[in-house]
Every structure is written in C-alpha cells, then in structure tokens.
Image (tube, rainbow, N blue to C red; front, side):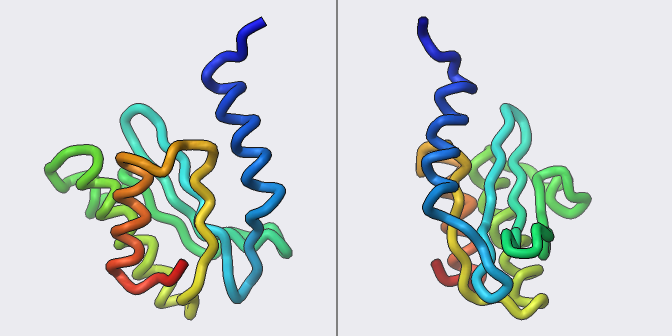
Length: 118
C-alpha cells in the first residue's frame, strides 16, 4: 500500500524530531507550510511552551505583496526579531518534514539575515 503525501511527511517529521529538540536557551524553530500560508514558531520542548511565533497571516505581513517565497522570508525576519527581543540568538531549525527548498529555505534565510544563528 502506497503512503499518502501526508503520511510520508509525518514519517520524515518524526525522524527529524528524534534528533532536533529545543531548550529555553536554544529553542526549536518549527515550520509549518500550507498551500497558501507559512507559519513559524520558536518552541521550548523542555517546558512545552511557545516562545514566539510569526506567520504570513500576521497583519503587517499579510498586507505585503510578493511571491510566497518572498513572504516566507518576511515571516523568517519577523520571527527572528521577536526571538531577539525575547533574548534568543541561537536556535535549532526544524523543517517539519518539508524539503529544505523554496519557501522553507526562504524562511530560514530570512531568519538568518535578521540575526538568528543556526
């Protein structure tokens, strides 16, 4: 029986999550990509709390024009700015089972440009 696209992504995601986890000093930058939007959040897996989050649905970003990849870069910058305000500089990147390509890569590069280290 063939796996659906979602089942395959879930397996990859589980494989990544065995290795990548976040702490208060180095949280995990989790990415979720839907067909229209992209979401990113910094998670402390020890306490199970979200430190900060940003998405393409945020007011200042949703008004921006551009391709999905350009908007993903803006989301990366936004989540990085919020992280730096919260006192976080170093993170571990969780691509969420998606390929490091396209919108996921744009988000990561946007976060790096804004000052996050990973």
